[in-house]
Length: 325
Image (cartoon, rainbow, N blue to C red; front, side, top):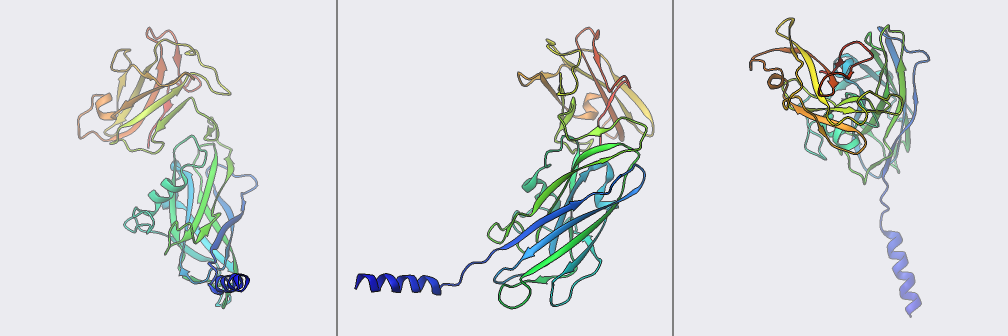
């Protein structure tokens, strides 16, 4: 009798509908062969969507790029699918999700939610997410309809005159469900991209930088921290082992006016925050440079010194590290 009950229990379990998740994965990222400054480059991202038991949604596709490219305003994305039996889309434009639309998972704007969920994917310089949506709401089911849909996202974006190396990042989910982990998995990936051809030094976001900010993306009206490393894996500065490090610099404001902070004092003294030779100072730019509250800042530049300024660390002799929006 006990064995019969066991069989009945097993049969009852088998009768319960299986929960099938949608596996939304990034299959490949294809970078241009020789991306150059001051040009339009094309990046191809291959995606795949496996079936779920029930669900219809537009796609929300996020891209992480350097802040200096302003990807939200300048990138053009299109989607082409194969295997979608109701009818494949061909070069369907993806449109930027409006800033006032919220991710249902977090209740925050989509770009902010991708930043919180996925971070900066190893980048050490200022990067930002932009999130786009498909026009088509895809209905993909495991029983009736397509079981697997493959997609190709083509991204065209103009570069600037700056040589740069970074991890470009990509992630996507169903817009209806956001980051519902019971429905979507394996949907974020990054790949190193290096753009060359410019006359200046390369901004390398793939290694620990001598200089960085927290947060990595900020506005001139924000309080932020300037961080300085005495040395990195590729550079040893003259301030290694210094008893004190001072933050000095220059601001450009109100259509080209300039103002310098060049005195070592308690006002410019940085705080040592680790045994690895990391220093930081939190600043509010208008206060740090003693500007009026209505000043319009367009650029900030910084360098570092010891107390008597006998040792100066700047950007390879150019005088300053450029830090700004």
